[in-house]
Each structure stands twice: as C-alpha cells, then as structure tokens.
Image (cartoon, rainbow, N blue to C red; front, side):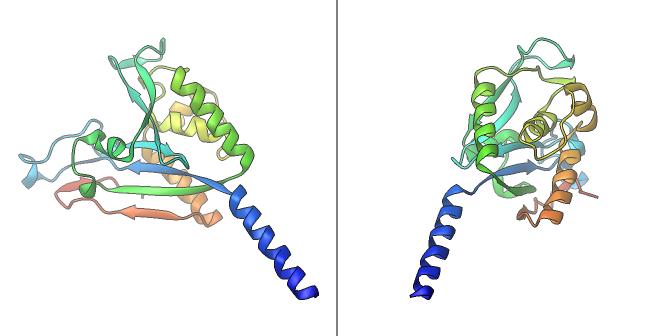
Length: 204
C-alpha cells in the first residue's frame, strides 16, 4: 500500500508543479546590414549592425514591444513619443519589414515563479496604459526597457533609468547578459540563422 501512495503523492506533486510553473520568452532580432553585392536588393535597417529589436513574450503568446510612436528624441523628455504595445508574433517580427524566415533571432526562455508572473502581469498592464519614459537616443529604448522590466522581476540587477540605458544601450548588451545567465541556469535558448544576404551582428 505504501508504494501506490508514494506514486500518488509524486503524481500530485508533479501536477501541482506543472500548473504553478511558468515562463517568459525574451525574443531578440539581431542587427544587420546588407552584404555589398546585395545592397541594391536588401534594405538598410535603423541602427545597422548594432540595431535589431527585443521584446518579451508572455505565456499568453502575445509579445510586449516598446516602440517609438512619434518623433525620435536625442535625450529623455516627456513620455509622449513612445508606447508599450501588445502585438502578435507576426507583428513583432515584421518590425524590419522583411520575411520572418530570413531574420537572425534568438529566444531565451526564462522560468519564473508565481510571484514573478504576478509582477510581470502588473508591470505590463500598467505600461500598456502609460509608459513611464520616452523613447530617446540617449534614453530608454527597446533593450533598456526590456532590461528594466526583467530587473523589476528580480531576474537582473536593478538600476536607475539613467544607469540602465547607459549600460544597456542596444540589444546585444542585454542579450549577452541573458545568454550568460542561460548557460549558468540551464535555460533553453533557441536560435534561427538569418539570410546570408546580410551581415549579421554576433554575440562575441
């Protein structure tokens, strides 16, 4: 009788854990520029090699993306030129106006606790209504904004907005930190190689 009870307990524990466990996916689009022989057919992208895009996919399959909606600013100011958008997967990857299967991208899957999930839901609900900062060259952009959310969840060290955007000036700086943590914590990472028609940003 002890063995069946043990099996039942193990099954219930596993079921409970699977129901309580959750994750977020940090989605990276690498920066790039056309190779010389394709410069007439491939578009130039904003930011070039150090450009790209990053956002967070929640467990609802929706992508949270910090984007500019007005004129770009050089320095921080009123948050009147930016928005946090809840977009579909297709909309997220179409930011560079090219085929998704031609993009170089990385997906880092981060397991989160129930408290972290509640924090993420609370932050994104508030930010979808009103973003607390503008989009600026020397200010918060997609990488620093994504970092700021992860830091509030306790996944990365928390800094002031100024220190955040100075440290996380473009997506690669965030990606290198998360790839390092992924290796240490055995997080899953999925990659897609981009079209050979473009010179892609590297992680080293």
